[in-house]
Each structure stands twice: as C-alpha cells, then as structure tokens.
Amino acid sequence: EKGGHDYFMLKEIEEQPEALANTLRGHFDGGRVILDEQRLSDQDLRDVDKVFVVACGSAYHSGLVAKYAIEHWTRLPVEVELASEFRYRDPVLDRDTLVVAVSQSGETADTLEAVRHAREQKARVLAVCNTNGAQIPRESDAVLYTHAGPEIGVASTKAFLAQIAANYLVGLALAQARGTKYPDEVAREFAELEAMPAAVRKVLSTVDQVRSLGQRIAESKAVLFLGRHVGFPVALEGALKLKELAYMHAEGFAAGELKHGPIALIEDGLPVIVVMPSPKGRAVLHAKLLSNISEIQARGARTIVIAEEGDETVRPFADELVETPAVPTLLQPLVSTVPLQVLAAEIARSRGYDVDKPRNLAKSVTVE
Ligand code: F6R
Image (cartoon, rainbow, N blue to C red; front, side, top):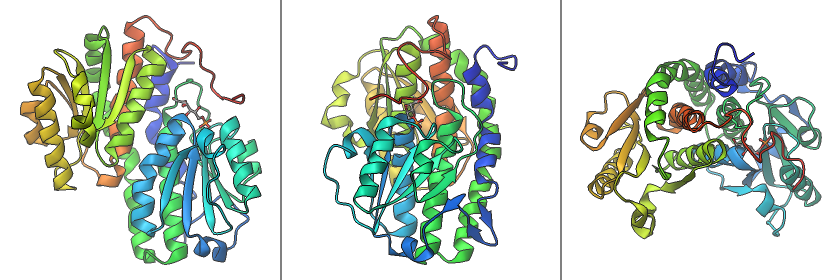
C-alpha cells in the first residue's frame, strides 16, 4: 500500500500536486470563491473586522503562512495563535471576529475547545478541515474542506499544503466579500493557485537529490532552519518535521533574529537550511537573507539553501543548493516546504526510525 515507496509518507509527499488540485476544485465558480458550507450571510463576512487563525502543530504553521496573504488581500488584522494558548487566555472576541479553525482531523481537542470558546463569545467560526463531518466543522458557522484525501502518515504533508491553499481561499473569500479586491483580481489570484500543482510536481524532481543529502547529514547533532516573511513559517515546519520524524534537535528561526541570539549556536559543520525568497519578488528580503547566509557560512555552518531555480547569487554561499520553480512570493511555501518534508523523512529512515509511525505521536490528538 506504500505504492512501491520505502515509506508511506513519501507516497503522500508525491500525492501533493493532486491534493492541492483537489483542494482548489469546486471552490471557485462564476468568478467567486465558494465555501462548502456557509451558515453565515455575506453581510456577516463583510462585517468581519479581525481574524484569528487557531490551530496546532503543522496546521498552526499553515496559519502563519496565510497571515501574510490574508492581511495583504483584505487589510484585516490577522492573529495566528496556538489553540492551546488561545483557549486559556481571554482573547478579545465579538460578533465581528472571524475565527478560522484549521485542523486536518477536525478532532484536535485544543482546536475544538478554542472553537467552542470563540462561539460562546459570539465570534463567527470558519473551519478549514480535511475530514468530512468531523466535530470541528460540525460546530462551525462555515466550512472549507481541503479534500486532500486521507492522510495516513503521522507527520502531516499533503494536508499541510492543502491547508495553506484553503486558508488562501478564505482570504480571497473575505477580500471579495469586503471588496478589497476586484473580481478580476480574485480570479487572477485563484489562477495563480491553480498553477501550483504543476509547480509542486516540478519540485518533486528534487526528491533523489534531497534524499541523498539527508543521508549525508543524518548523523548531525542538530539542524537549524532559517527563513524570512513566508519562509519563516516554512522554517518552523521544516524543523517540526525533523523533530517528530528523526528525533533530532531542530529549530526554525526568523533570519532577522540571528544576531539576537541564535547565531551563537553556529559551529563548524552544523547544517543550516535556508529558505530563500525569490530574487524577483521582494528584492530587499532576498538581499537580507543573502547576507545572513554569508554570516553563518563564515562561522563554519554547512549551508543548505532552498532557492528559486536560476538564482545564481546564492551559489557562492550554498554548500548544497536545492532549486524550486519560480512562483509568486506568497505561494512559495507550497514549493519550498516539499524538500524539507523529504529531508526529514530521509534523515529519519537513515537513522533507522519508522517514518510512518514516529514514537510518542498519534495522528489525531483528542486528549490534551
Ligand atoms: C505535524 C502534525 C501535527 C498536526 C497537529 C494538528 O506533522 O501532524 O503537528 O498538524 O496535531 O492536527 P490537526 O490538523 O488534525 O488538528
């Protein structure tokens, strides 16, 4: 059932183009983003004045990615919070607050309790979920199903990419309701999303390169991940994958924080994965990250750089270069996450661990 793969997770990694296409299918019609269930009026959506994304683990990282797009498209403030923190403080919620609860399983206890708390405070709740009829969508005012298909591997892969795409659709739905984007602009953003399955298919051609890299760094003590802007949550996700699968110390940092502490960790031979932004997108981000890589390389780090194909400027700083196709800046996480998934799985396999059944973890965390 692993479809000829050494481990199931690799099959799910390779299913990501199809999963993404399925997430997008049926969610845009007649020039409008369509949710699966909507017990909210258009006026309710128009009245939204603040968005909270609440989730756990990888789903939380999908929210961190989406914040950049939703704020940019809607001009609404977006806070992204771990469900386990959100539910135990006293967040400012009212009927004009939209809480987006993101959960693959739809059964995660903390996320479910966060939904209940939000509804008690009269906030509107929109669920982004991969499992039809699960508890979180049942208790929500609106639902967008990711339709990524069942995810068997304990570590989230295709559901994560699908969550990012679905969160973006939520952003576009809000932008169209609020009129912060013209219909043709919404259609253009959707068309860019529709090009992503092909881009992800392309990045899958790096699987063999990344597996061999994983084998070479499998004995490292630790691995650090650096990114900026949407690359920052990608760094967090890469580190989470490595912790849960390979039981290695792994940490993701915002590259701008390096000098505020983490740079002290750099020592000879330490692998540092850098998620580069596109040189054609936000030039300032690219320049800043280049200078960050040169700093860590000068201190002996082994730099592994995930960069856009044709970006020659990174070559001198990259001990290993993994190329991803050119895509719009906000969509980059959909391609740059993929090599990090493969890397974590392959390091785990090299260390002799069961990639599909990591120790101490359950697929769905229904107890706190
Ligand atoms: C990481 C992973 C977990 C889940 C988290 C939330 O690979 O799988 O961190 O993302 O437990 O689960 P859901 O999305 O089902 O609420």
